[in-house]
Length: 374
Image (cartoon, rainbow, N blue to C red; front, side):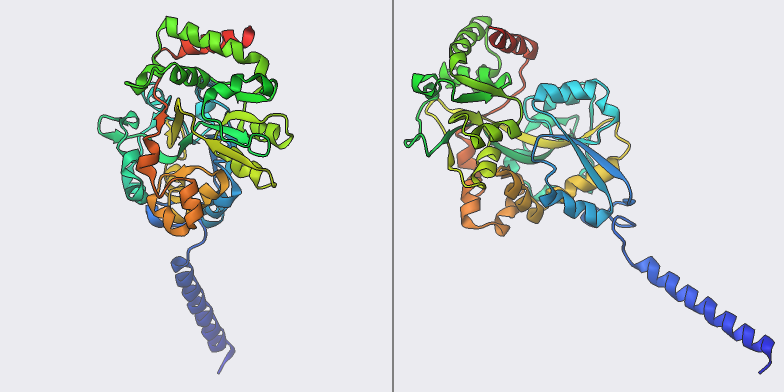
């Protein structure tokens, strides 16, 4: 065989090998390359997805799996109240963030203001497995389109240190008990006005009344909250701050979310939650896509991922909150299912007056600021 023939054979072998390798490569899936998994969309790796969210909603327990699967970096900026969320979006954040997690008191407002985009449910197959009670809520629907995907829900409970307070308090009036002076914390938020409205019995016949109080009722609420001030150690601004107040034994009573007992009790403490006789309010958090986001496909892929049943179990692990995917119960112990009420969701939800849109939200904020200024 001459040299020229040998070169031709070697060249042919190299070409064949290259074709074979190319074919194999076209069939393999690198994270985030050509298939987005269940959502069925194309997602390219190397992107960054920016969340504007409540604390606990970007925990590595469930976010890292998404990052690893799709080759995407997830960043989170936390807000401490619904009003802060709206302010950040209107203050230029609409060009920064991709996904937000508003609660049920401002979701409809965000739609009206054009700050969020409709979600293509064809890209969210896991939507089918979410609790009907959550999907049926109309505040995130407009003109036949859905703007928010249910994520988590929970109560604004009375949280107490069970090592100090042996008997579960049966009324919010315990906050005004002189023996707990300087040992109480409430959220720096207008939701305290809702709480006083419940103590006034306003929502016994119509739950919306605590969210649409008259001026006279607002003044009564203001008086009651001013009377509480000597009892207050601090108005907490974030869940992390409330966690620290309990961890440092600065407070024994608070209005708070299940995230606090979940987090603090993991360190060996003994916090408990209870529902006072006057009732409690609560929230339903949805995932929404910012209208000006340039990553809408990626955002839908993320939403579909985090509402998948096994991932929702991890969300509950991290937060202690109720989750929207009812099939998550299959991945939970009976104790966890009972703790987050996924095994009795409909009945437990009947005990909660879930936040609604406050039509005169500016006035509620004025009243709350007047309380703090006293």
